[in-house]
Image 1 (cartoon, rainbow, N blue to C red):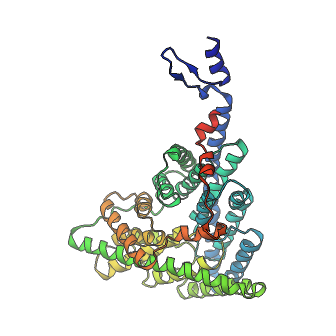
Image 2 (image 1 turned 90 degrees about the vertical axis):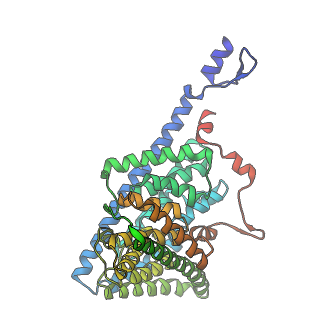
Image 3 (image 1 turned 180 degrees about the horizontal axis):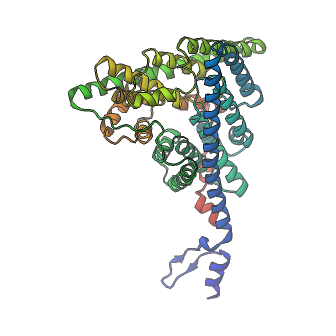
Length: 466
């Protein structure tokens, strides 16, 4: 009896039962377990709250830009280039690791061993930099989204929880924070889970599934409580009917995938070229390069009457709801998103990519005499799957963002066609290829965590029990 009391009260070693089998200790009675669990839940709450605040700040910044640019049509020629220069300089010199989407940083951090390098990519300082510079980018008309940066911010918050409370499974918590960031940013919890499995880890990790689900649920509840239940791109009941509908599905999926693969290929190649060109005279060229990018984005935006500035959310939502955008919307949005993405400023490509896909699909549907809303949905699935090469994430995120359950199979087909077409143009997955730039280079390739380092990172429940 004394041994049993010791096991229950002190969390001591397991006892031998009457049949000789070990009786496992009960960690759920230990205060240390609940303190760590409370810290984990608090981190998930923080991810949801920060995601909502980030969304509101981004929307306010974008609305401010459109308000003033409509009143002074030449204003983008001044503030857009200057904003690009400032954001690129700050991301490269003051906050290294904050440039770009943020998803490659989170992927790289999971591959790095525990230590300073991982914490540098996902620090509290990096959170403030990522949010602030993305908001500044939207305030100057950059074609960026907040969803990718929210992934890095969510991963950073959960990593800080792991550090403060001594939780060992940092890789699992980074994955959970990334999933919660996507879920809260789009109000799409299923997409957050699928994104974590398909894109972040490229595998299903049984020991982290509970962590991911719990974090997504808590973050989603916070978002639901602060913003209410809504669909990101409105509501669509569009469906594919008859042979013409399936022909449209094939065209939108294939064309979207080819264009998405071209975007990824150009982004990787131009980024590599730009690094080499800037390295030739970094003192001058690190300012000239983003200045040129900003001027190009401003000129395209002025010629398209502002359609290509910002996330493209309003135009994409209108297309999903049946309003046909201008024919030049998708090529202009493709160009400005590519230029912004290679400029070196912080900001994601999720929302702009969905906007390009919606415009492309609506244009194809209009040319074939089909409904604009159907083409917009299929184009989003094909193009987005082509850019990120994650078809499950593509169709799940579109289903959740539009509330459309009538086109599940066509969206799946479009996403798979987009993946296949994209790989013909760009065999390398975009985010994972970009993540290589944040990993240390060694003669034998990229430095990966050892088996011992991976085994050391135990699940949260196990770490909390000790």
